[in-house]
Length: 151
Image (cartoon, rainbow, N blue to C red; front, side, top):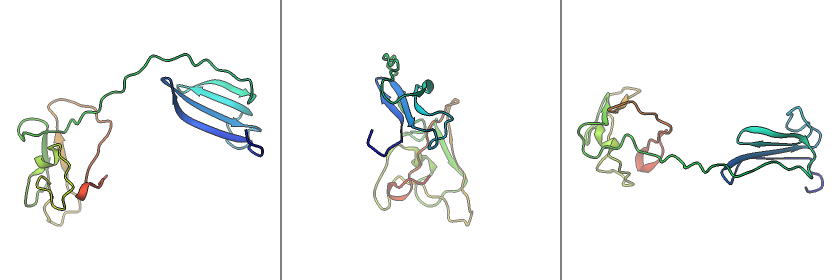
C-alpha cells in the first residue's frame, strides 16, 4: 500500500462468480465499522474482520455459475390487439397509446409511432400497460422525445 494511505475500500467486485468487498482501515477511524484492519465480505457475508493487511487469506472456491436472467420486454406488443394492452387517460393527434409499446425506438424529431398525450391542460396523464397475467417488473425504461430517458 502506498505510503501515507491508511484506508481503502473495494466494493462489489465480481470475481469467479462471487461478489467481493474489501475494506482496510488501519485504525478504524475512517470507515467507522467498529473494527481496525482488514475486513472482507464474500457474497454479502463477512468472512474476515480485523485482520492484518498482509498474510490474510479467505476461501474463494468458485461459486456455481449463476446464469443472468434474460431481460424481457413484457410491454412489447407489435400487433396492437390482445395483451399487453396500453391505455392512457388522454391521447393527442397521431398514434394511440398502443404505439408506445410497439418495441421500436425512433430517433427522428417526430417519429411515426409515438404516442402523445392530449394538450388538455392536465398536469398528469395516466398511462397503463395491462398484461394478461401478473408479471414482476424489475426495471422500467421510458423514452421521451428523441430517445431521451424520461424517467
